[in-house]
Image 1 (cartoon, helix red, strand yellow):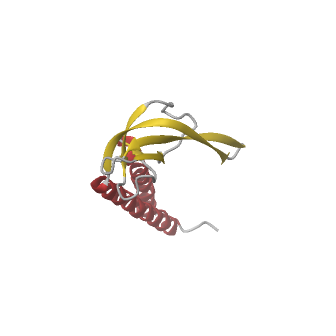
Image 2: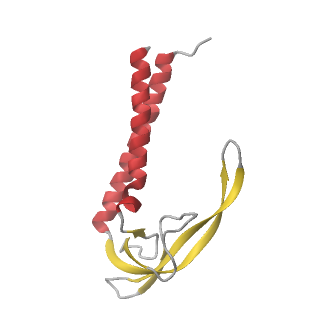
Image 3: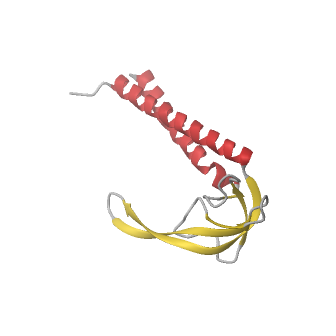
Length: 146
């Protein structure tokens, strides 16, 4: 029995709309963060390495992810703060001793900090919007062709 293509298109379209809503929420959270954050210079004082399990159809393995640890002075209080960066990588773009512009939440300065770069701020919402556009487009095409 062949599945109903119209139903398939509707399901794919709805999944796309859900991803779009999640992307909108993430983007609104980023905008709220940008409204309240403070900017300062920080120094990478360490890289915190974590082992992460990766699995695909052919392989399963562990990889190391390096998270930058930043030290900076809270511009409001003058207090020295140490905080982890919000993104880690198997090939960290920062080295210990490097100075970086960061954004941090003044209500939680020792929480996760974000490097002041377009991609660190907007990569996740852009990816979600792109994936949503693909799902919605495929859903529409399947519905129209069925």
